[in-house]
Length: 435
Image 1: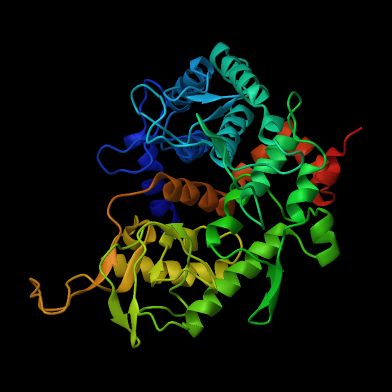
Image 2: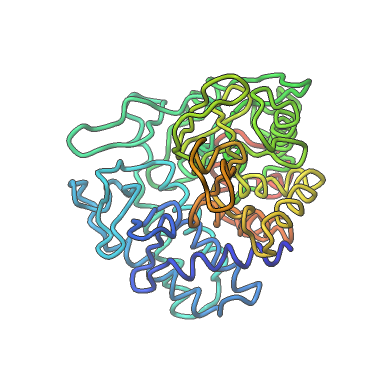
């Protein structure tokens, strides 16, 4: 079952990646632009495909080289139609030209996800051939070019992004989030590193909660507890915050998984389908249908949104990929839920388990309208596939099966340096103490 799910998710990058420039579409929907974060997942997924026998080593290498050469040669002027600036990149790019799309922002977190993919490729392609040596050199060039401290306009705090004409966005990182990866990469830079004050400034905004009798570092959407763990093995390593809490970020994600499941069991807003095997509120696609009556109230539906537990938003939409991505933390919860979701979808390679979102509460046919199979047909499922979802499936299933991504990135000097500078100690990191 896991092999079929993982292989089907991997095929997303084969089908929706452009071999000429290495760019990968954000979604499978027609006309989708490339997402730099999805490219980062692709660069990480290709080595998995090689090890699983789904792609030749040379094919994976050439796809990685195409992306790396593109970013090396891309327009870094920061103009409205460029690709990026200061080593960072616009969130969305046109698939053909690689220039900025949708008037989007230069995104710090999405650049970090891209860099994580580049470092994964460099850690995997270690042969003494000309092409693999070029790949490693390109990754060094691109990682060293990122001016992380540029994104600290007010000192310690790191902003979310920047736009031509208006400058830095008016908000920074507040509370625990997927920025854990960003800080590790930014602190690990040998050229333009974040300052020592950056990480404490962020962790000082953390929110420790006790929900349903479970104490943990709070973040509502499930993806926050997963993204950084796709690359970094947080088992047994602790920063100052986690040492004080006698925990670590891996254990914290395990607890967050249990909180998500307990919320679904309690189902305080009375949505259809929530139970011990149906849970996972996260960022993803959702219905944009008109409001409907649920448990005596008028319920709105939010489309694409970051849903969270327990304070919402919640409109009855669950994420199969997000639930599946908790496999490494709580397989005892995920595997039974996954089997049920796969059986329900009728496809061993996915269905609901790979769809960005599904909602059993929404009325697919409004009241009073006759549907083909009878009135008031229920249920909604996201159309197409989203690259972030498919990437997380490939990486987190692989970490569960073999620990491959964790093993590769444990050998990455930027990751180790960044974790040390953030104050992480113990576990596997103790074997790489700086001299």
